[in-house]
Length: 273
Image (tube, rainbow, N blue to C red; front, side):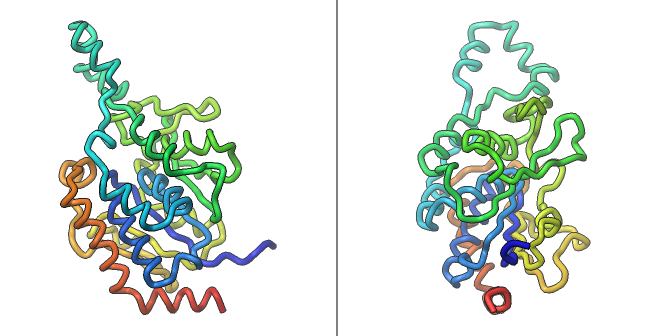
């Protein structure tokens, strides 16, 4: 039967709004809940945060998010940019619908560099899961249990899950074992039920919208952490990088955890009993 599950953490996708999740993690650490979290699932930036939180202390995770630069998220592929400047034909192709579908002129190299510096994919103390969307069927997703893969492939899975659609990989996605995958947020942006299907009955779900579909909120005593104010839309939140906004979102995450401190501690006491 194995060890009984304790608390599972569900992390939504939302690009730069992931700073809110870092604040939530800091808040959970502050109230002493993180030792009871033994499983984390994430889609898109939630997958990146899952491995970050499991690998790093809260101060390191906070520093990464609070010092994030626009070029870290929207890193221009210099080779492709140079080709566009030197070749009018190539530039026309990239400006066309076909060029957009192939993926923009952005790369994940800066994200890879951040992961290389701070994350050891051979480590991990919790069960970690990343959700990716099948490129051939945008309604279909796959959950990868990262512990079942070699460290280098774990990194590729996280990059696939967190590749913003049409910005990085276009319609063909990232190849993993011969299959194309896209951003996990396309098919299941808040994959709570996927974690429950793996045995976690007590879950804390972090939303990156302050107006989630009420039909998808937790039941049976599980806890939803919902931003108490809007984190912005795609342009004003997902791809917007400013130190002021990152800090505001991070601080809000801590505050929203403290608002539910009593319920969270009751959940921890129940699973540790």
